[in-house]
Amino acid sequence: MSKKIWLTPNEVAELLLVSPVTVRQWAQKGLLPARTTPGGHRRFSMESVRQFAIREGMASRLKGEASRCILVVDDDEQLNRFLVELFRSKYQGAFVDSAFDGYEAGSKVQQVNPDVVLLDLMMPGMDGFQVCERLKTDVDTMHIHVVAMSGFYSEENEGRIMSVGADKFLRKPFSNAEVIEACGFSSANS
Image 1 (spheres, rainbow, N blue to C red):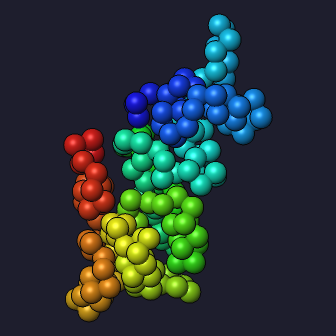
Image 2 (tube, helix red, strand yellow):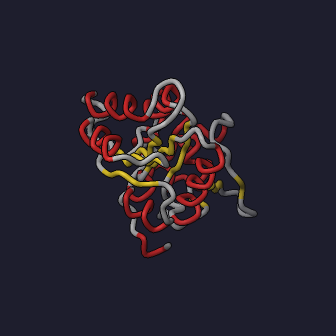
């Protein structure tokens, strides 16, 4: 279903684990944007369904490949946007969001319940070490796969981030295939 661009109310209901009547009511109230076919049937874009699910705190309900969610956390806006677009373009069934500092990352983790956090170590305010430690010591977030990354490599930094629970460590710059693989996605599409 993740390859489909337009979904029927029944498909949206199955994806979000609600009844088709609920989906139709959301559309009637203008909460979930829909297009109407020439035959009068509603169709929902996959992207609008994802955005709705996140806005309404239902991202964790998305089923299948669409439930794959990655949060990119890096204060380098250019790299952050590049990584978001990389995952969005290669894995259209996944939801990708971003944060630009550790505090915003904490808020986004609560909103989108990511499967993977791609986390820069060196950020102003709350750095990647603190973010990772908080994620890995909280019972509600300890399952999140944390991929740490840094342009300031040292054995000390790598050891420190791994000791607070990171699952992988990447040295910047890295290839598209390396980051995709580290995040647990198939690199066959890259």
